[in-house]
Picture 1: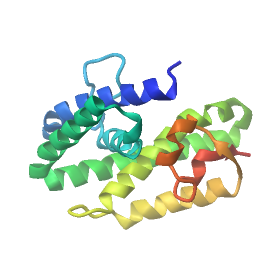
Picture 2: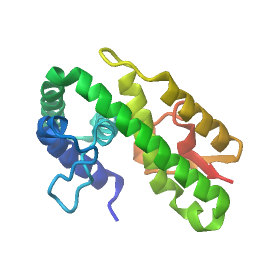
Picture 3: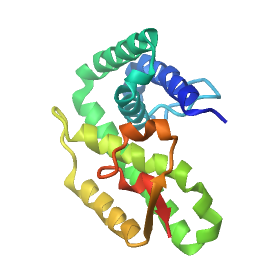
Picture 4: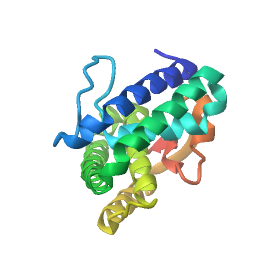
Length: 192
């Protein structure tokens, strides 16, 4: 298992690869794009934005060369998406709807078979973090967030809050500055 620093370096490598394939991804019809590496997740806008958020917020943990690599990857991403604003927004909305369904299914399974799925919460919370990254970016110009999707998220959050036990940050402690509790409350505790 990787420690938080190794995971951050791995995130940087994944971000760089995602940025390098973003143009092809946006030209395709594929929502979950295989990057051709068995040790890397599928390429999605949400997966990219999740890592960009974390790496940018925690950039002081990266050395100078890694910070330059991060800046170059972000610039490459921006270059890839700039001619595809409408397509990027549409793809992000499609992914957001899929991630909301995925999160809803996990929460439903958790309600029905609590003991079997409770241990997976820290890993499954990444889906909710991707949802947050998608929302954050879709709320920034030139994009517009679909209010219906936002309402779905608020409904899911309300249900989770009703049976949530606040507690310690569930991801590596070094990542906590990237995820302040008021905005990322679901990373501070577990479902009851």
